[in-house]
Image (tube, rainbow, N blue to C red):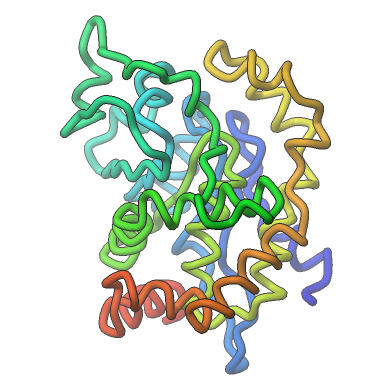
Length: 277
Protein backbone atom coordinates (compact mmCIF):
# COMPACT_ATOMS: atom_id res chain seq x y z
CA UNK A 1 0.00 0.00 0.00
CA UNK A 2 1.21 3.51 -0.71
CA UNK A 3 2.99 5.17 2.21
CA UNK A 4 1.29 7.82 4.28
CA UNK A 5 3.79 10.48 3.13
CA UNK A 6 2.96 9.94 -0.54
CA UNK A 7 -0.77 9.97 0.19
CA UNK A 8 -0.51 13.15 2.28
CA UNK A 9 1.32 14.98 -0.50
CA UNK A 10 -1.90 14.88 -2.51
CA UNK A 11 -3.85 17.19 -0.18
CA UNK A 12 -4.78 20.62 -1.56
CA UNK A 13 -5.07 22.98 1.38
CA UNK A 14 -7.77 25.60 0.79
CA UNK A 15 -9.38 28.12 3.11
CA UNK A 16 -12.94 27.12 2.24
CA UNK A 17 -12.74 23.31 2.11
CA UNK A 18 -11.38 20.62 4.41
CA UNK A 19 -11.28 17.53 2.18
CA UNK A 20 -9.76 18.47 -1.18
CA UNK A 21 -7.11 16.30 -2.78
CA UNK A 22 -5.65 15.46 -6.18
CA UNK A 23 -6.10 12.02 -7.72
CA UNK A 24 -2.66 12.21 -9.28
CA UNK A 25 0.35 10.23 -8.13
CA UNK A 26 -1.39 6.91 -7.51
CA UNK A 27 0.28 3.75 -8.80
CA UNK A 28 -1.39 1.57 -11.42
CA UNK A 29 -1.27 -2.16 -11.97
CA UNK A 30 0.92 -1.77 -15.08
CA UNK A 31 3.63 0.21 -13.32
CA UNK A 32 2.40 3.68 -14.23
CA UNK A 33 0.92 6.47 -12.14
CA UNK A 34 -2.09 8.73 -12.40
CA UNK A 35 -1.42 12.30 -13.51
CA UNK A 36 -1.81 15.24 -11.11
CA UNK A 37 -3.86 18.27 -12.07
CA UNK A 38 -6.51 16.30 -13.95
CA UNK A 39 -9.16 15.29 -11.38
CA UNK A 40 -9.64 16.53 -7.82
CA UNK A 41 -12.06 15.31 -5.18
CA UNK A 42 -13.55 17.61 -2.57
CA UNK A 43 -16.19 18.45 -0.02
CA UNK A 44 -18.68 21.28 -0.64
CA UNK A 45 -17.33 24.28 -2.57
CA UNK A 46 -19.80 26.87 -1.25
CA UNK A 47 -17.33 28.56 1.10
CA UNK A 48 -14.29 28.91 -1.15
CA UNK A 49 -12.46 32.18 -0.55
CA UNK A 50 -11.33 34.51 -3.33
CA UNK A 51 -7.81 33.18 -2.80
CA UNK A 52 -9.10 29.61 -3.20
CA UNK A 53 -10.90 30.48 -6.42
CA UNK A 54 -7.80 32.11 -7.87
CA UNK A 55 -5.67 29.11 -6.94
CA UNK A 56 -8.10 26.57 -8.38
CA UNK A 57 -8.80 28.41 -11.63
CA UNK A 58 -5.54 30.17 -12.36
CA UNK A 59 -2.99 27.78 -10.87
CA UNK A 60 -4.63 24.35 -10.95
CA UNK A 61 -6.52 25.08 -14.18
CA UNK A 62 -9.97 24.08 -12.95
CA UNK A 63 -12.53 24.12 -15.76
CA UNK A 64 -15.25 21.71 -14.62
CA UNK A 65 -17.23 21.03 -11.44
CA UNK A 66 -19.05 17.68 -11.10
CA UNK A 67 -21.65 18.27 -8.37
CA UNK A 68 -23.11 15.09 -6.84
CA UNK A 69 -25.36 16.79 -4.29
CA UNK A 70 -29.11 16.36 -4.36
CA UNK A 71 -31.36 19.02 -5.87
CA UNK A 72 -32.40 20.03 -2.34
CA UNK A 73 -28.81 20.55 -1.26
CA UNK A 74 -28.03 22.73 -4.25
CA UNK A 75 -31.11 24.87 -3.68
CA UNK A 76 -30.64 25.12 0.10
CA UNK A 77 -26.98 26.06 -0.14
CA UNK A 78 -27.32 28.54 -3.01
CA UNK A 79 -24.69 29.79 -5.42
CA UNK A 80 -21.04 29.13 -4.71
CA UNK A 81 -18.27 31.48 -5.86
CA UNK A 82 -17.24 29.30 -8.81
CA UNK A 83 -20.72 29.76 -10.29
CA UNK A 84 -19.82 33.32 -11.28
CA UNK A 85 -16.98 32.24 -13.57
CA UNK A 86 -17.80 31.65 -17.22
CA UNK A 87 -14.69 29.53 -17.72
CA UNK A 88 -15.85 26.92 -15.18
CA UNK A 89 -18.60 24.54 -16.32
CA UNK A 90 -20.92 23.09 -13.67
CA UNK A 91 -22.57 19.71 -14.14
CA UNK A 92 -25.06 18.10 -11.77
CA UNK A 93 -25.44 14.36 -11.20
CA UNK A 94 -27.36 13.51 -8.04
CA UNK A 95 -26.80 9.94 -6.85
CA UNK A 96 -29.95 9.94 -4.71
CA UNK A 97 -33.56 9.30 -5.73
CA UNK A 98 -35.13 12.76 -6.06
CA UNK A 99 -38.54 14.09 -5.07
CA UNK A 100 -39.48 16.78 -7.54
CA UNK A 101 -37.76 17.56 -10.79
CA UNK A 102 -35.69 20.40 -12.19
CA UNK A 103 -34.36 20.22 -15.74
CA UNK A 104 -31.68 22.75 -14.79
CA UNK A 105 -30.97 22.86 -11.06
CA UNK A 106 -28.40 25.64 -11.46
CA UNK A 107 -31.00 27.84 -13.14
CA UNK A 108 -33.49 26.98 -10.39
CA UNK A 109 -31.04 28.04 -7.69
CA UNK A 110 -31.02 31.57 -9.08
CA UNK A 111 -34.75 32.03 -8.56
CA UNK A 112 -35.75 34.43 -5.79
CA UNK A 113 -37.79 31.69 -4.08
CA UNK A 114 -36.50 28.37 -5.42
CA UNK A 115 -38.78 25.36 -5.12
CA UNK A 116 -37.21 22.90 -2.72
CA UNK A 117 -38.49 19.37 -3.38
CA UNK A 118 -40.88 17.93 -0.82
CA UNK A 119 -39.28 15.57 1.68
CA UNK A 120 -35.86 17.10 1.08
CA UNK A 121 -34.66 16.50 4.64
CA UNK A 122 -35.10 12.75 4.24
CA UNK A 123 -32.49 12.59 1.48
CA UNK A 124 -30.21 15.39 2.58
CA UNK A 125 -27.26 13.12 3.20
CA UNK A 126 -26.66 9.83 1.40
CA UNK A 127 -28.42 6.99 3.20
CA UNK A 128 -30.42 5.44 0.37
CA UNK A 129 -29.80 1.71 0.30
CA UNK A 130 -29.85 -1.09 -2.20
CA UNK A 131 -33.00 -3.16 -1.85
CA UNK A 132 -31.23 -6.50 -2.37
CA UNK A 133 -28.43 -6.01 0.15
CA UNK A 134 -30.12 -5.92 3.55
CA UNK A 135 -27.40 -8.05 5.11
CA UNK A 136 -24.64 -5.55 4.35
CA UNK A 137 -23.47 -2.74 6.68
CA UNK A 138 -25.36 0.55 6.24
CA UNK A 139 -22.55 2.40 4.44
CA UNK A 140 -22.07 -0.47 1.99
CA UNK A 141 -25.81 -0.55 1.34
CA UNK A 142 -25.81 3.19 0.73
CA UNK A 143 -23.07 2.97 -1.86
CA UNK A 144 -24.74 0.04 -3.61
CA UNK A 145 -27.92 2.10 -3.50
CA UNK A 146 -26.34 4.78 -5.67
CA UNK A 147 -25.63 2.13 -8.29
CA UNK A 148 -29.12 0.68 -8.03
CA UNK A 149 -31.13 3.92 -7.97
CA UNK A 150 -29.06 6.28 -10.14
CA UNK A 151 -26.85 4.26 -12.50
CA UNK A 152 -27.42 6.82 -15.27
CA UNK A 153 -25.88 9.55 -13.12
CA UNK A 154 -22.92 7.42 -12.08
CA UNK A 155 -22.23 6.91 -15.78
CA UNK A 156 -23.06 10.54 -16.58
CA UNK A 157 -20.53 11.85 -14.08
CA UNK A 158 -17.81 9.63 -15.53
CA UNK A 159 -18.70 10.69 -19.07
CA UNK A 160 -18.34 14.32 -18.05
CA UNK A 161 -14.95 13.62 -16.51
CA UNK A 162 -13.80 11.77 -19.63
CA UNK A 163 -14.79 14.63 -21.96
CA UNK A 164 -13.47 17.55 -19.90
CA UNK A 165 -10.63 19.90 -20.77
CA UNK A 166 -8.47 21.21 -17.98
CA UNK A 167 -8.88 20.07 -14.39
CA UNK A 168 -12.14 18.74 -12.96
CA UNK A 169 -13.32 18.55 -9.36
CA UNK A 170 -15.85 15.99 -8.14
CA UNK A 171 -17.67 16.92 -4.95
CA UNK A 172 -20.71 16.37 -2.75
CA UNK A 173 -21.29 17.67 0.79
CA UNK A 174 -18.49 15.91 2.67
CA UNK A 175 -16.55 14.57 -0.30
CA UNK A 176 -16.42 11.05 1.12
CA UNK A 177 -19.51 8.95 0.25
CA UNK A 178 -20.98 9.94 -3.11
CA UNK A 179 -17.66 11.41 -4.19
CA UNK A 180 -15.92 8.29 -2.94
CA UNK A 181 -17.95 6.04 -5.19
CA UNK A 182 -17.42 8.13 -8.34
CA UNK A 183 -13.72 8.40 -7.58
CA UNK A 184 -13.44 4.65 -6.98
CA UNK A 185 -14.89 3.94 -10.42
CA UNK A 186 -12.64 6.55 -12.04
CA UNK A 187 -9.51 5.13 -10.45
CA UNK A 188 -10.51 1.56 -11.35
CA UNK A 189 -10.84 2.59 -15.00
CA UNK A 190 -7.39 4.18 -14.79
CA UNK A 191 -5.94 0.86 -13.60
CA UNK A 192 -5.39 1.80 -9.96
CA UNK A 193 -5.45 -1.39 -7.83
CA UNK A 194 -8.14 -1.93 -5.23
CA UNK A 195 -5.86 -1.40 -2.25
CA UNK A 196 -4.93 2.08 -3.50
CA UNK A 197 -8.58 2.96 -4.16
CA UNK A 198 -9.36 1.91 -0.59
CA UNK A 199 -6.44 3.94 0.78
CA UNK A 200 -7.59 7.05 -1.08
CA UNK A 201 -11.14 6.59 0.22
CA UNK A 202 -9.94 6.20 3.80
CA UNK A 203 -7.80 9.37 3.71
CA UNK A 204 -10.86 11.44 4.59
CA UNK A 205 -10.63 10.03 8.11
CA UNK A 206 -7.55 12.22 8.60
CA UNK A 207 -9.67 15.37 8.35
CA UNK A 208 -13.00 14.13 9.69
CA UNK A 209 -13.10 16.41 12.75
CA UNK A 210 -12.65 19.56 10.64
CA UNK A 211 -15.05 18.22 8.05
CA UNK A 212 -17.85 17.56 10.53
CA UNK A 213 -17.28 20.98 12.11
CA UNK A 214 -17.60 22.64 8.71
CA UNK A 215 -20.87 20.87 7.92
CA UNK A 216 -22.22 21.61 11.39
CA UNK A 217 -21.68 25.32 10.72
CA UNK A 218 -24.09 25.15 7.75
CA UNK A 219 -27.80 25.44 8.49
CA UNK A 220 -28.39 22.88 5.76
CA UNK A 221 -26.40 20.13 7.49
CA UNK A 222 -26.30 21.19 11.14
CA UNK A 223 -29.21 19.07 12.32
CA UNK A 224 -27.82 15.92 10.77
CA UNK A 225 -24.39 16.57 12.27
CA UNK A 226 -25.95 16.85 15.72
CA UNK A 227 -27.77 13.52 15.41
CA UNK A 228 -24.63 11.41 15.00
CA UNK A 229 -21.16 11.41 16.54
CA UNK A 230 -17.96 11.93 14.58
CA UNK A 231 -17.19 8.20 14.54
CA UNK A 232 -20.36 7.46 12.59
CA UNK A 233 -19.27 9.91 9.87
CA UNK A 234 -15.74 8.51 9.60
CA UNK A 235 -15.04 6.46 6.46
CA UNK A 236 -13.59 3.01 7.11
CA UNK A 237 -11.37 1.09 4.74
CA UNK A 238 -13.48 -2.05 5.11
CA UNK A 239 -16.50 -0.25 3.64
CA UNK A 240 -14.83 0.38 0.29
CA UNK A 241 -13.11 -3.00 0.42
CA UNK A 242 -16.52 -4.66 0.69
CA UNK A 243 -18.05 -2.60 -2.11
CA UNK A 244 -15.18 -3.45 -4.44
CA UNK A 245 -15.37 -7.13 -3.45
CA UNK A 246 -19.09 -7.23 -4.29
CA UNK A 247 -18.46 -5.53 -7.64
CA UNK A 248 -15.76 -8.12 -8.35
CA UNK A 249 -18.13 -10.94 -7.44
CA UNK A 250 -21.12 -9.66 -9.41
CA UNK A 251 -19.60 -7.87 -12.40
CA UNK A 252 -15.93 -8.76 -12.56
CA UNK A 253 -15.08 -5.40 -10.98
CA UNK A 254 -16.09 -1.73 -11.32
CA UNK A 255 -15.18 -1.72 -15.00
CA UNK A 256 -17.52 -4.66 -15.56
CA UNK A 257 -20.35 -2.75 -13.88
CA UNK A 258 -19.69 0.23 -16.12
CA UNK A 259 -19.69 -1.90 -19.25
CA UNK A 260 -22.99 -3.48 -18.21
CA UNK A 261 -24.45 0.00 -17.73
CA UNK A 262 -23.47 1.46 -21.08
CA UNK A 263 -20.06 2.98 -20.34
CA UNK A 264 -18.16 0.89 -22.82
CA UNK A 265 -14.53 0.40 -23.87
CA UNK A 266 -14.28 3.59 -25.91
CA UNK A 267 -15.49 5.80 -23.09
CA UNK A 268 -13.38 3.89 -20.60
CA UNK A 269 -10.32 4.55 -22.77
CA UNK A 270 -11.12 8.27 -22.85
CA UNK A 271 -11.45 8.43 -19.05
CA UNK A 272 -8.28 6.41 -18.62
CA UNK A 273 -6.44 8.83 -20.89
CA UNK A 274 -7.67 11.78 -18.85
CA UNK A 275 -6.21 10.28 -15.70
CA UNK A 276 -3.09 8.71 -17.18
CA UNK A 277 -1.71 10.36 -20.34
